[in-house]
Image (tube, rainbow, N blue to C red; front, side):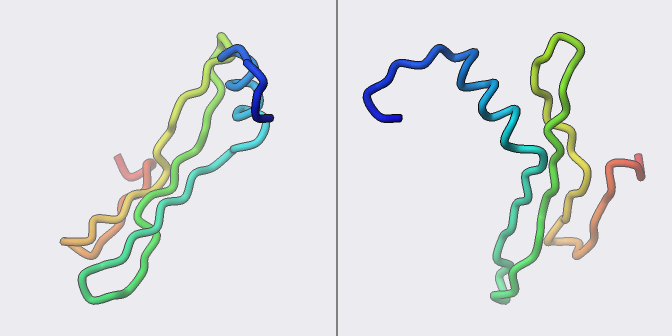
Length: 70
């Protein structure tokens, strides 16, 4: 789509229709790769996108926390 000027609202609609979840992966100091975060793209009442964390991994503690754990 090079050379086309798109309004921000059109770009947001494209992203909104294409992405549901973001998964982040990192490499630990020992070389092991782990999923460190899972974030959901939630739709707000006005149609705006919101990031809703669902899972985080704390490498130093070697543990994880689900968003439901509080």
